Amino acid sequence: MERGQLGQLLRGVVGAVLCLPLVLYGRSQSQRPPRSDLQQALFQGVTYERLSRDAPRPHVIHIVTIDLTVPGVKLFVTPGDSETLPQPDGPTTETSARTVTEFLQEFDVQVAINAGYFYLFREKTPWNYYPHSGDRVNVVGQGISAGQPYSPPQSDWPVLCFDLAHRVQILEAGTCPPGTVGAISGNTTLPLSEPPAASDPNRPYGRTIVATDDAGETLWLIVVDGKQPDYSEGITLTEIAPLLTELGADIALNLDGGGSTTLVAGFPAQVKVINAPIHTKWPMRERPVATHLGIYAEPLSE
Image: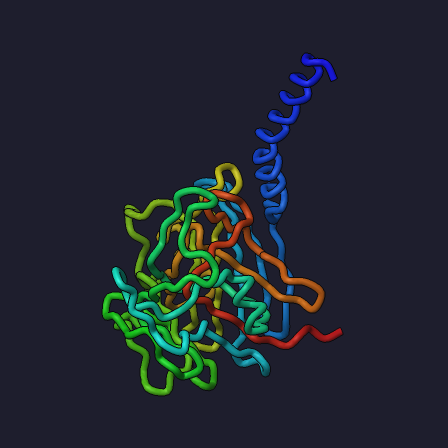
């Protein structure tokens, strides 16, 4: 091969290598759910709705409505590890990080979302981040799974609690009552009976929110995609409140959002990521997180 031909070949190879990340990024973008409205039943007692809106900015909302009175519908929280491990230069860690898909597959739930806040955490590049799956993390606020507490309550971290009958309540005090079998904590509640604020100090963000009615018999999982210009740029807590009131919710709890925001469903033939997560600024990439909320439910009738 002549020198000129070799140089041309090398330039072609270098160009292809440089273009590969753009090709892969574009492929990931194409895998996001369409910006269109959709309603469907997922399982017995579990329905799903997708809303695509353009005002006040593009955003896509995913709503899972769960009727906790339907037989077979049960809730499950990520369990703590068998023992907590103090880190030499950091906090005590209670769980090992998992993506929402990994949690769903490990515990065989039908629907799952990311749940509470956690640390240690960093996100610098697509390859330089913490935690990876299996890394130890600290759970913020009260954490209970299968009746076993593993993370202590904190008064400034409100909590969602459920009992053996799988009735839910959201408590601003941050401590669940005796008889609680599962708990996840968030950073703030949305008391929907109050009028919306005249100004909103929050910036648009990807959101994961749980809400319940006054009887604790209906649970809503609300996921809003964020950090994706022209597709879904997130929403503020003030902006989401009217939708929650329209659904019939009495109170809501804001969970970990941003790049943690993930909703997954498991069907007999496949596991499907329902929303458009964006971990390390990469579309459809899931972030390993500390805690999750899972839903058990029976399949739809033929």
